[in-house]
Length: 72
Image (cartoon, rainbow, N blue to C red; front, side, top):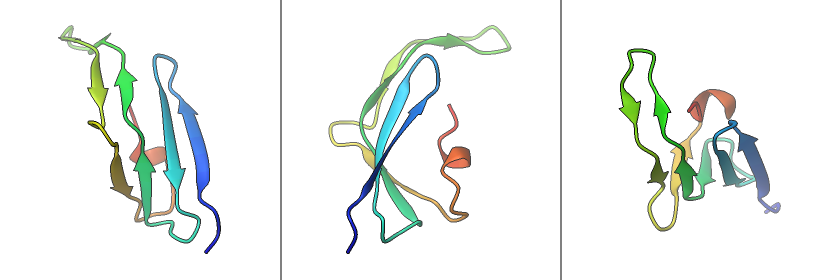
């Protein structure tokens, strides 16, 4: 089995770090991370929050593209 690939995505207000098993494009792990507060287009204010709990979470990736599965 190959070593996992570590990826980092910078969305400006927050950064997502994840570990992708090199032997599977179907599942990847997202580490816990802080999401900064923001204002929606309709004026609703969303407070900042932690996403991922204590140990992160696994995401499925059926189309092989990480970009469309990690939209803010």
